[in-house]
Image (tube, rainbow over all chains, first blue to last red; front, side, top):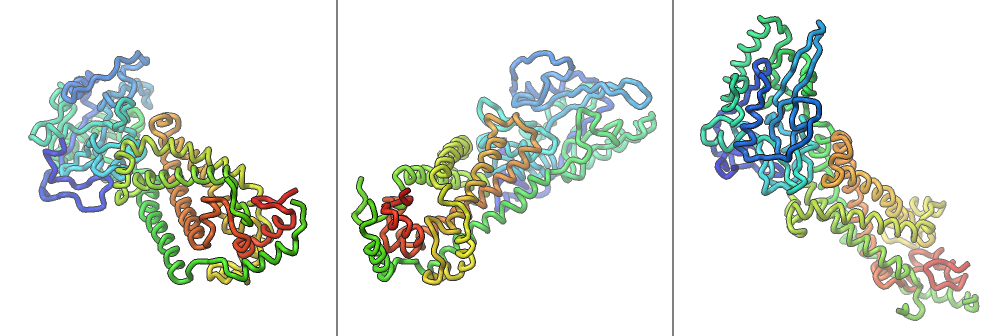
Length: 304
Length: 217
């Protein structure tokens, strides 16, 4: 759906030039997932499949309400269920809607080698443009949240689009529309942050002293945020990373090695050319031929 | 096929075929690899039928190169052992570079520069193969952790860039030292060439009555 918004990219993968940015006053959007209000009904998961026309293969029961067992090319959002025993020995059923976080500094986009396969709109949505995807899996390595999945059928990478097609025409994402409890909200990032502030206050008033908003600064903030009752330990929510950031391996690979290696190759080639210009070729001279012939003559008669 | 009268065999038929299989693979890998490494070079993927084809074909060419280079190791390792001549040769590297070859100590079949190319590639090729398998998404995408793949990606890129720099030196040296290209295309060199560049090798061949590439006995 990228052609609808082709003038408001703020980042394009594998591009060294400035992307079209004429529409420069887009409001940054955000999806707010209030974990404390989620009842685990999976209406969001169903709505995502329906709107995006995704039908994965029917799997097998894995002993958990998390179904299917993992994100996949046909599962762009997934309710992850965790049975957590808290400090007082009580059971808490933690349910987190997993999917792309739409980072402000997207690791997938930094790692992607295919021009225009990953784009970031001015409103903050990070989108995959399948026709440009080459299926290398670099986005998987770039992502700090383990979100993109490569399809074995077509070797393209897939993930949540934040319903960029719906958002571009003024609608909310399908999961937001389907949520019956208001646990998923969508709006400007500013509004979502301020509403989250109220929710966090409310939760603190009800005994969740560590309640907080999950908008991790290590990736520049995200355009999908969580209200977590236990924001001090995000990892209890099915392994949500505490301080996500693009891996240092990816940073060195793309930030240091990429320009340095190219410069190194150019310098080596130019050095070779200059040597040829300055010193010239090394050619066999007449006296080499003569010395060789003399040597052979002196050793004639050696067994052949 | 017969070599011209009075010339010395520098590389056998098997060695030449093996070398050119490796060389073809290397160039294809370099072009396809660079297209996936830097955005400014992504257009090179067009030579392989687009990004998807480049990504598909690159690892398979890599497998062929690794096997082919193993063949080169088998054929050349004996003449690439490091010895004292190499240290003496390296001390005269300035004379080598300015073509003042009369002042350079005599060397055997390969000089220290050629040995450097041989051994660094003998290290880099297995490293590229191992890390390449780790990041081969279609078959091994699930075989290792993502963190391992990130490290492998970095090592693969670094090793490839290093290998390409060594390859540039290798190719340039072949152009620079006249007669070297023919040694690998047609397989032979003149006695004068052998005398000038690899005098110890030349002496060993002549005194044992061998026409190359290795002395008799």
